[in-house]
Image 1 (cartoon, rainbow, N blue to C red):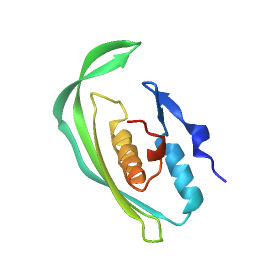
Image 2: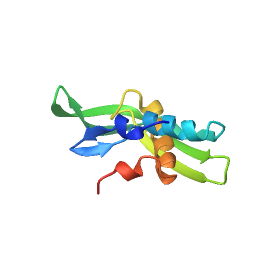
Image 3: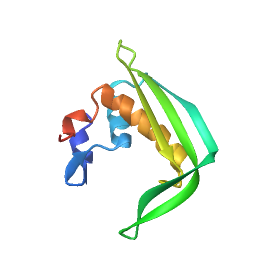
Image 4: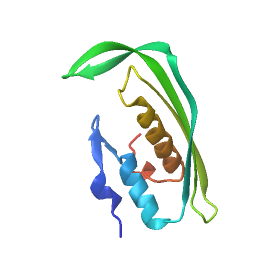
Length: 120
């Protein structure tokens, strides 16, 4: 049996279940579920400036690019959820992967995976 509580990490003193752990938990219960991701937007022409942390210092970073992903998850038993996430190149070098992972994480959260560990 999968124990997600063993995978919790702290972010700003709050418990957080990473997307990879939510996904492992979900797949352990629904191995035949479908997870469909779709790249909605990839625009490399728009420039953004975002605050980022480098060596524990907050700095402004400018880069071109934004990605938006949309995910639909079906557990095969009637449960369906969606998630959408955008990320900018100025915030993350791997912004396309981060947007896709984030959309999966949001859909999993909508199905209840990881939300019980969130502190409001």
